[in-house]
Amino acid sequence: MKFEHDNMVGVRLAVALVNLEADGSWGVTALERMLQDHAIRRARITDSSCAQIRAWVQRLRPVFEAASQEERCRTINALLADGAGSVYLTTHDGLRPHLHFAPDGEDVQSRVKAVTAGGVAIFTTEAEGQRLGVCALDSCRTAFVDTSRNGRRAYCRARCANTDAVRRHRMKPSGLGSSAGETKGF
Image (cartoon, rainbow, N blue to C red; front, side, top):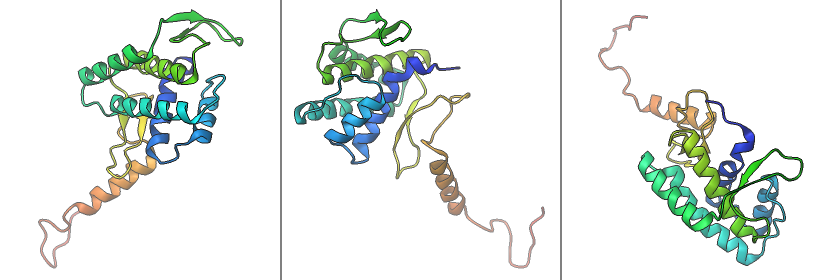
């Protein structure tokens, strides 16, 4: 399954916001920078809008943690009901036609809610309810979007996968089935 970058702005913003909130970097400046990095125009953040977006982001995390397609769909539907306005096609800034879930004139927190709710909904549809997750390493829990070829990603990055593999290897009992002086066959 191939995912086009243009269709992933909302889901990539959602995962970035969830991880920003989780890693303790949340703040007006960090949020403003992140929104600009994800092409959210006119992203002037106040303390009030920062708090409102943070509350929204705490509602986004369960989308990535959902244990089933049904749970993920219920969570996304609640986000769509509260965050997405009328969906419409638009072109601007030389971009090809694309969907907007809130009018450009809305405040920044409304636009963030709309683009993230719509983005995770579209991605979930294209990914057949899968491919959103949190890192399987217990000490990490970073949210991610799985765009791998096979769609079986369990870790946010290779470092976490390697750390967990080493931990599992070290937990294996050593020397089972051999007594002192025996050699194992290779």
